[in-house]
Length: 239
Image (cartoon, rainbow, N blue to C red; front, side, top):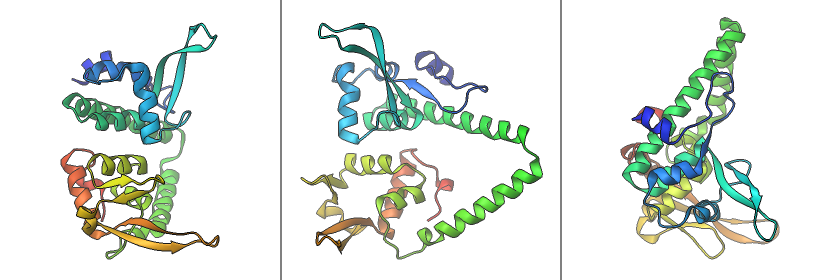
């Protein structure tokens, strides 16, 4: 299956040039096949709805020809591996699931190659000591995130679950746990408030508001659901 998808949705991953992976949005669009909007509208709509950033999540590819008004014609969008995975999840289709697993396999190969190349250029003992120091430092910084009876914001919750904050927020919106109010703030629906805590705050400017936080029960619930949907693995999460 992966070899078939490599022919349908090729990527630029090589051992010599492994700093990033780019995939064609048009190839992904044509593979999924059941998308109801034309390709020229698909990526712009997703960018608007989910907050993807030009230059960070994707790059616009222009053709050589111009429109009557003299504007360059967009022929494709090159997607980062993270954006490609999120788009595959958003589609909620069998082909979307297959594509996402394919993208995860590509990402795993990238990480393996990066580690291999790094080991080739650095003394093993030095690298092991460096990694241990970094791991100890990271554990010290983040140890408070795994404390029980703790309410965490979307960013810290995403870090605990091992996903991007953008992916977690989009997943909560898609699965009707949260919605955006008129100000664009993310709020939980009343029927699922058992998974959230609202924390009131007051800024120095005098502005008052409330922040949406996720409680222990919410983290456990979302962990189970993300594992069931094959978005994360059980051994990747340390609650």
